[in-house]
Each structure stands twice: as structure tokens, then as C-alpha cells.
Image (cartoon, rainbow, N blue to C red; front, side, top):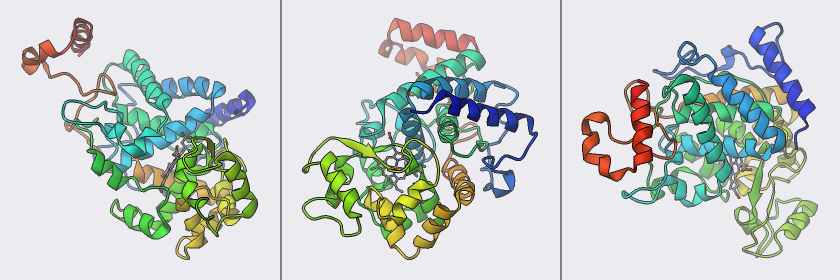
Length: 364
Ligand code: HEM
């Protein structure tokens, strides 16, 4: 549980960033950022929704103050959104007549239900202040950044202007794009290469596992029937207590040293053979990624810098911009048909939704 004094310190750092009076160690400067994708901009909502980032940060500050575990859920949500069909908010969509949603595909079933509720709550607040001009996918990206920062990690500016996708990915596409925790470094390097992400991006992004939890089903193959020989003995013994047999449903932390703080201790865990998933531990076993793990374990600033770089890169994967997609009026559903084709679909929605739609179109 993050103490409120820790969060207050984070707010102070933010104040310093906002007024630019000092060069803080946790602020990553623009020279270390990747190129901004066409159609996105750091100032996209500066004029039309100047309080956007404050609204989101203040709300998350309150939420994390009573439950810091929600930060991990929001960070993972952004990763799952971006790796499947790009950062288009498609992971947020409920299923429809066209088939089961991306949200209901196996890798997404362990996303925190609360993370979806928080994103919708943020959307309601942002749209109440600015109108329907900020996409759910932008809100997810900002919430992920704030989750990192408010957990003790680096602050960075998020390129904005994403639009929300009209369709979710199939369950097969979701499974193909989200690597399983049993994947080794070779599989991960190849998987990320298809998204133009390098081995350095892989190691840096895996540092997201410095916060949050995993369930027995995600690592039980390392314990039963035979114990993974790369695992530290005491660590394995403790995990067996949490997961006494196959199919246990308990959870444990991803970073045993500092489970709720965004720092570089995850890499120290790996060097001590205390990584939870094969996908974590093999980054230290594989000679291509091992030096990168070591460099982050001994230098937190380097990790922060590279994490920010890779997060901005990941956050721009196959984004929809300009007139592509839409700005959803409900993060879990595609917008009802526009007014021109509205009459043909009016029978599909109830009176309450209809009034909401009319209210919204009146505002634009
Ligand atoms: C590289 C491949 C990755 C694999 C195989 C992977 C796999 C997993 C798995 C299996 C879980 C736990 C699910 C469960 O057992 O309930 C998890 C949790 C998590 N992952 Fe990853 N992950 C990867 C990359 C990432 C990335 C890139 C990020 C963010 C930058 C991330 C952030 C998280 C977080 C924060 C959690 C904890 C969620 C919570 O506590 O609710 N992961 N990951």
C-alpha cells in the first residue's frame, strides 16, 4: 500500500516538472524519446481539453491512495491494448453479435475488471469537462503513464491523438499477439520483432513486472511436475506454498523485493533467479538479453530512460489518427450509428441510451 506521504512526494515532483525549475532524475527528457507517429502530438489536447491530464492524475491519485494494486492493472491494460491490433482501445470492447470479444480471449481474462471500470470512470469525467473529444485509447495511455509515475517510476509526456477502433480482434489474433508467460527469450524476441520492437525494448518493457501480481496458472509449469532448474531454491519453496499443486488459483507478487514500487529491483530478482515467469527469467539466461538485464539492475536511471523510450514506442503501435476510427462515447461499445443511419438502428437501443446519444450530438 503506497503511503499518502509517498504520493504527496510524487505530486511535488509533478509540480516541479510543470514549472520546470529543476532537472529531476525521474523526468526523462525529450532527446531520449522515439519519433512521434504521424497524427499524434504532445500538445494534441492542449487547447481543447487543457485539464485532461490533471483530471486523470487527480482521480488516479485518489484511487491509488486506497489501492495501489490498481496501478499494475492499468499498466498491463495498455500493453494488452497495444500488442493486439495497435493502441486502439479494442481490448475495452464488449463482445457483440459478430463474436466473442478480444476482452474475453484467454490472455485478457486475467486483466483486472477494475481497470476497465476505472477507464470508463475517467472517460466520463474527461468528457464531462471537455466533450467527446478524447479517445478511450488516449485515456488508457495516460492512465498507464500515471500508474508508472505514481508508483515511483519515471514521468514522461504521452503523444496523444489516438482514435478508437471500430472492431475488436478475434480470439485467435489476440492469442497470437500476446506471448504466454511460458515463452522463452527467443520466442519473445521474434514476437516483438514483428512489431518492430527490439531485444532492448523487450527487456525494458518486461520491467513493467516490477509491480503487480501473477496467478499460479501462469507459472505452475515451472514447479510441477518437475522444478525449473534455473529457479532459486528458497524462492521455489515459497512458490510451492502459494501454489501447493497444479490448478491452484492463488496469486503472488511479480517482484519479491519491492512489489508495489516501480523501480529496477525486478532485474535484481532475475539476477538472483527469482523471476516469476519463464518469460522473465529467460531474459537473464539468454546471452543476448542478459547484459541488458544486468545493466538495468545496476543502473535504475538507465532502466527508467529505456523504459520510457520503449513505452512511447509501444504506445504508438498501429495507432488510428485523423478521421480513422472514432471517439467512443462509452469505452466498452462502438458508438451507435451516426445520425444519417441512425433511424435504421434506433430499434436496437433503449430510450436511456437514445437520450444519451441525442444529448451528446447536441453538444457537438
Ligand atoms: C513480454 C511479454 C510479457 C508476458 C509473457 C507477460 C505475461 C504476464 C502474465 C502472465 C501476467 C500475470 C497474469 C496472471 O497470472 O494473472 C502479467 C502481469 C502483468 N504484466 Fe505482463 N507480460 C509481458 C509483458 C508486459 C509488459 C510489456 C508490461 C507493461 C509494460 C506488462 C505489465 C504487467 C503488469 C503490470 C502485470 C501485473 C498486473 C496486475 O497486477 O493486475 N507485462 N504479465
